[in-house]
Image (cartoon, rainbow, N blue to C red; front, side, top):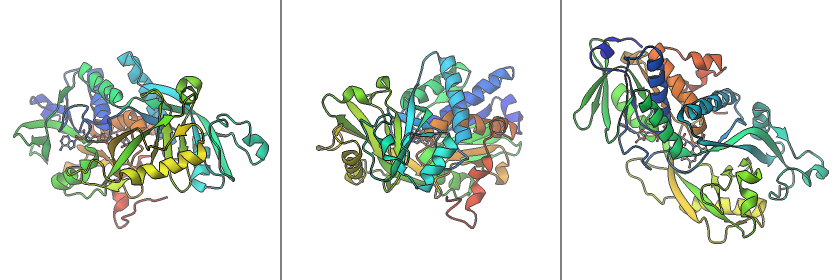
Length: 414
Ligand SMILES: Cc1cc2nc3c(=O)[nH]c(=O)nc-3n(C[C@H](O)[C@H](O)[C@H](O)COP(=O)(O)OP(=O)(O)OC[C@H]3O[C@@H](n4cnc5c(N)ncnc54)[C@H](O)[C@@H]3O)c2cc1C
């Protein structure tokens, strides 16, 4: 926030480190904010690998959006993000989000499911009486176990993931940001004049007034080495699975026929997006994965351990609609960045950096939908010292502080 000297000395107003969804949204928010303040200000996005690479968390065909969260802190951020997705699409002139209904299902008394229904304003479509079970939307597809319920909500949809990251990178560039890929940041330091110096592995140096760190699964390593701060972010290897619809069932599972994104509570946490990107295939996956080192990945670790519970779930709850016999037709690797309480980290790094360096990390397998909101929030924190948009949207940032782990390694588990 301070150190305007950096910009006037040929440096940047803001340097964003990491070009996944969070960094790309932050670069766009910073560039468009700089442009609206009269121009002249500059934003730099540094990405270690190629732009739109497949080695982090933001690549691939699809991510789901929903407001049904067991924790009341997320729906306001989802709603803010939904508005910002629309604004960005309008500026880009094309869509990355296909709206669909969203369905949550699980044991009727499950406390997390009950809270998600309430917080997300969902309507229960399967009531306590057996009669209602015969006539609820999608009752022809799902066979709910005894004692389960299902709730439908309007805020749902499928976001084309890589296309969305590319959209924000294009919009950032259009608003004057400089994008540099194949540029690994190895150090971030505070200078005597208050500016921030960013060093890369190739020996290049960049000066900025502020820095926004959004390096996904690499967050613990980088933040520890530059600021000595411990972020409990554990990378997990996870798997995206596409399964073949049974002949004749393909069209029932598409957004065009009104099929929803869905999440299933209970013993295994399952999520899905409708058949879209690969005609005749539907994405159904298990939330979770095996711990991994992002620099030493075994690209097939935990494959069957993640796919087998999904196959069992499909056979039980979607009988006759999806073929599981040969396993998933397509498997794609991805990484989660888990915090112990699965809440995000959105905070100032602090120490000598004061309010000039912010970090967004630990998105724990559910951050993509909120990318535009997180990018805007991080940018306002770095450039203005506070996130006005979050306050106006009712987003309570206190939940996402690094300090919650001090003397409490589990964070705010709920
Ligand atoms: C299989 C799967 C399914 C998911 N489904 C959903 C969903 O349905 N809905 C939802 O909301 N979310 C979902 N998520 C979560 C969501 O995709 C992530 O929360 C989000 O992509 C995290 O983005 P990020 O920008 O923090 O990380 P990343 O995308 O990993 O970006 C970090 C970037 O920083 C770069 N970087 C690292 N170190 C450096 C360095 N030193 N210098 C420069 N650059 C560096 C990396 O190369 C990378 O490009 C899913 C995730 C996965 C894996």
